[in-house]
Amino acid sequence: MIYLASPYSHPDPAVRRQRLEAVCRAAARMLRDGQFVFSPIAHSVAIAEHGGAPDSWAFWRPVDLVMLGRCNELVVLKLDGWETSEGVQAEVARARLLGLPVSYLEPGDTAVRPTSWPA
Image 1 (cartoon, helix red, strand yellow):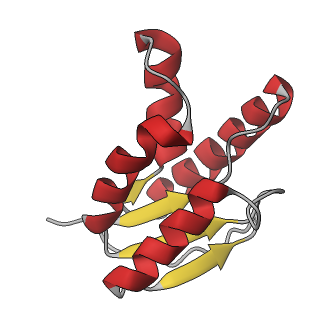
Image 2: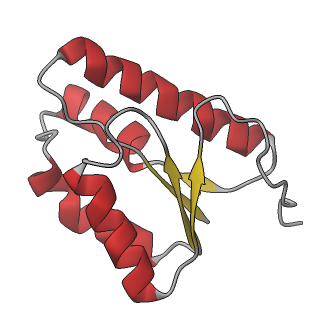
């Protein structure tokens, strides 16, 4: 399972929406290419919006880091702000601590490694 990290937090709601849409497009592309992917942003934003849960990194940090520990690798979607994102940097640090491979994906990149779905 791939953990797809990306920045989300920003004071401008339009930037947050753009980041959400970009990571959803990347996750969908990866799934279409046969990869199992978990995107904490795609997963948590909808829950926060519809279920009243906070959308802060402080709230989601424990959940995200547990999910990362269940994954086999970390892929960072290099949206603007990824290098300074507290969440992305914490996820990279945890992945390295766990010995998981870390790779980086440019937005719109279609060179995603295909894997086969289990039978």
